[in-house]
Image (cartoon, rainbow, N blue to C red; front, side, top):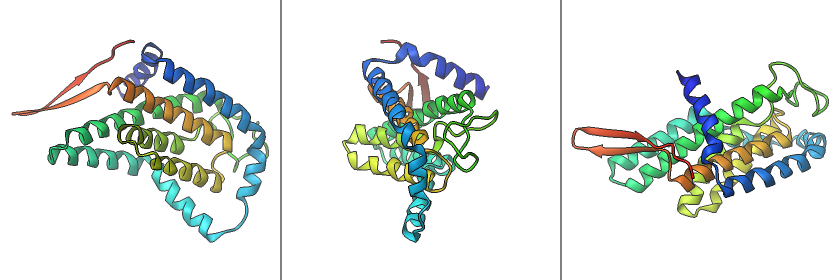
Length: 219
């Protein structure tokens, strides 16, 4: 059932995407292409020893962990409902939707591209069945969630978080530079779509509990 839901979600994206998401895809693809020649060089830079860099990598990596990020967003949303902060609850729900959409798209791309991770390959252009380097899932979801809050509250400083996550994934030799750029593109695109649409799921408090409604509309 979960796989069917995510597949339908992915297939419905082209019907709901607008000009802003088209621009994100266009310029994002260009950014990925331009980052490809830098993959090997950046990996070499990341090999330098530094305890501070390692500590930053640990922090940045945690921000992209779904097992921490998803519950965190849920707690913020439920806290918003409990405190009567309807906007916070709504934005948290949008962040959750962006998390799911971007994660589903990234998993599809990982399966199709089959790119080897830096720890498995001597070149960025090595591919093997079952390899899942492109794009970076950590960067994808960190960008998606942070972008929703940044857009809704005007907190551009939040974009530091996915940048730190990208650094962490490269520092840990888990992703190439272009993997992290692609993840940022997918995450930002999903967030832009959800924010522009005002979300696709509505949770409405009622006297007897909560009412959940879904809206999949075009335009």
